Length: 221
Image 1 (cartoon, rainbow, N blue to C red):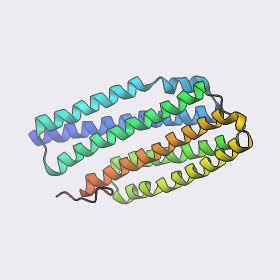
Image 2: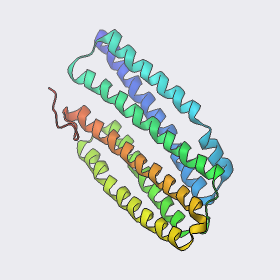
Image 3: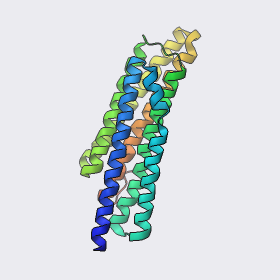
Image 4: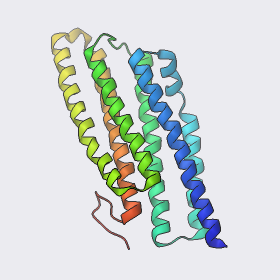
């Protein structure tokens, strides 16, 4: 009977984390829409919507702590819960980056005709795809698919490097608009971090399944 209770509570944990992931996924979609159309009202909604995400994070953290304290899991079960706590942080930070991007949209004066903005949107779409796939492998525990998510970070990093060069070129030609272009650099950096968080999620999925974290190079039995 205790094992059945534990399995039920662990399944509930996975469900709640998936629900939070879906909520954050919608935030990313809203951020893409706001950036593409310069919808300041939508941007403000995302920028001011952190309370819901923080509440979800707090509830899930509490669930993880209760599972550890009450069920005293060992080996694989403990590894899963520990990985969930790590993944939870990265999901929450994806939402933070969206809020940061939208905050810039609401107070900045971006050039809506800039080709660089189109490239920034494309970069955000690539990071969004990484996050969706990372949450998919969180459910499927597909190690090969998780590794593919990690490899996709090179694409986002490459886009980031190109945007930096592009924006620096714009600043050189139009130094009077330097602050407007700097906002694009900040947004691009936030998106680059979103790719990193998606990579972290995928890496912790690999750890859940294999006991091996790609960055730590350590294996647990």
